[in-house]
Length: 343
Image 1 (cartoon, one colour):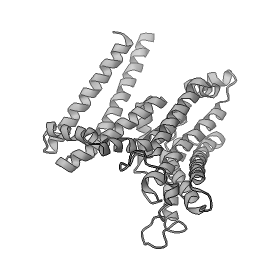
Image 2 (cartoon, rainbow, N blue to C red; image 1 turned 60 degrees about the vertical axis):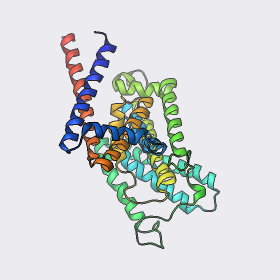
Image 3 (tube, rainbow, N blue to C red; image 1 turned 30 degrees about the vertical axis):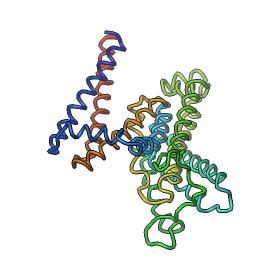
Image 4 (spheres, rainbow, N blue to C red; image 1 turned 120 degrees about the horizontal axis):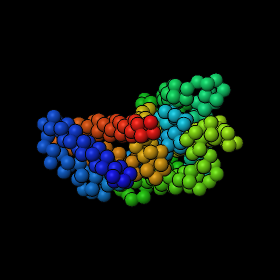
């Protein structure tokens, strides 16, 4: 059996296992699987609003998943996309609310730049800890997540809190600084186009530039990269900054296009989901976009099932976790088979 046929067969097996488990979980919820799946697809394709909502939910996953993929390419395990999302959102809100003298379009560009820079610097902290002190980036990025989340908690209760209300959130951002909708009255916005453009830019960077080549070499074999004159630390630092910056953009877009203000819990844990998105996509930029859209579609369809039939939408999270485990198991089996062949 050729390698392509083998991969196709493995993908079919994983899909069948996932469908079987999903059907079992629907039955446990005392629902009819046929009716549940019908509602699932109706939620996605039944109307324009539901279809556009898929891309709305996919947008932050594309940014954060892309960020994780870039970092993973060099072996820098960035688990801090959640925190980088939050500091990006905080920086964007600070610019959007704190610089009213700057015209709307210019302020949007400045907010995007500030969010990217804030997220990139937040990721650089972990890279420097690893480079200078030898501390695992996994530990540092996870701890930085908690710091960033609580920074927003402080901000929306103090200097950014809406003075006319008692809820911990900022005032609403001026309409001139909000990202425009593409298909009103749906929530689909310009941020999705920015996410797609980011995918194209990162793909070009990784596939067509010297920096992208060096990033991939460092990821494959750090020692070989160093022996060939490629700076391992430089490329890890660059990939960490890009990774954090992309996650920061997710926060900017969420503030300027969806929430239109800063508030707690703004990310809905998409920074953690991004790790799964990058893993399922094999750290490929285009793959990240398709996986993000697929996961968003599952969320939209599952929400419809829950509204119509009472089937818990948490089933989607279970199935995503199952798919990840099956893919990891497939990789382990492949490596064991390769070792036996080489022996």
